[in-house]
Each structure stands twice: as structure tokens, then as C-alpha cells.
Length: 253
Ligand code: PEP
Image (tube, rainbow, N blue to C red; front, side):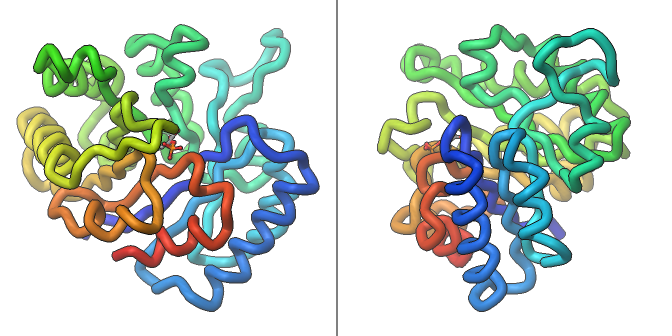
């Protein structure tokens, strides 16, 4: 059975004090309201991780994620954060390949393949993001573009390792724009991704992978999106910064 996951990417928002207060609110509401079969993941900035980890404590419906990591294990990489550092503060998930990192930091599919390997070898779970620009969609090349992202960054993995990955389909034209993919558009892409995975690893593996949708997901549209056969949850940006909205998205199954 696939896991139901709602992950919040805080991006470069909130001071430590604000982050601590947001995490505390979420942890409290989740304890009272969230169903047992849903997992919420908080992905704050690096400097919040240690404090947020303590706030999460042993709450079993919430986990901690990072927004990035370096592909090397240690050494002279000024300003970077390693997987061992993340593990040491209780991180379990790492977002990789977010479109903002691809666009502003030049992360290519091949480079992301290295990061995926580093994260998996550390025993952490990559949340691997993929998604097309509006221009690519308008040229009707979105399926081939997104499946290529998977092929080039993930298909070097063994089936056993591939099954440890969470995938997030995030059409770039829907991120932070208020324009959500329709449930039909999102379902169509998720189904396509699952078929692409089945072609490489077989349908048992494809059926076991959680594929999240991301892009202006909010408490109003989450229910329709999460009701789709191949959509297992969401990667949330803006709405993850409001405790009530974020948990309401988690309650949208
Ligand atoms: C994101 O950046 O991953 C994202 C989905 O952002 P938003 O929800 O704000 O569109």
C-alpha cells in the first residue's frame, strides 16, 4: 500500500522564532486531528532543523525533512550541509531537484542522480521533484520532459532502492502562482509517471511508490487532487506556512 504524505516546504521563510512557533502549532493540531494513516513532513530551513526536530520529538504522524544537501559526504565545501549532519538532527527526508534549485542553482538531472545516491546511502528518503514549464506543456512535450527527468536521475537505481523514493510532480507553472493543475491534468501526469516506472521496474514497484502533487495546493483544492487514483498526497509551499491550512491539507483524504 502506498503512503499518504503531505510535505511542507518552507523555502527561505521564517526566522528561527517564527519557525519554532509554526512547528509547535502544527505538531499540536496534528496530534488532535490527523488520521493515523497520513504522514506530514516539515521541511524548514537548515538552521531550524535542530529546534523543529525537538518539537516533533517522537510524534509518529510528523517527520522532519531538509530542503537540500550536498552530494559529498564531508570536506571543503563552504556553506554546504552533509547528509550526516542532517541525520544527526533527526532528518528523515530530503527534497531533491526542486525546480527552484534546478533553475537558480543549475542542478541538472545528472547532478541530481549523484545527490539521490548520497541521500539513499545515508539511509534518508529523497523527495524527488520533477515538473515542466508552461512553455514545454504548450509544446505538448510535458510527458517526455518529466519522464526524462526520472530516467536520468533515478533509473540508475536498483528496484530495491527505487522503492525507497518519494516522487513529487510539480508543474513549474503552478508553483507559487495560485494556478493549480486541474485534477485531470495532475492525474494524467501521475498515471504517466507510474506507467514509465512500471516499464523499467515492473508494476509492483510502480504501484508501491508515493507520487505527490505540488503547485498551489491548498485546503480548497486538495480533496479533489488527493481523490485521484495516482495522487498520494502533496508537496506544499505557500500553504505550509500557515498551520491551519497545512494540517487541513493533511486532512483532505
Ligand atoms: C513548491 O514550491 O514546492 C510548491 C508546491 O509551492 P506552492 O505550494 O506555493 O505552489
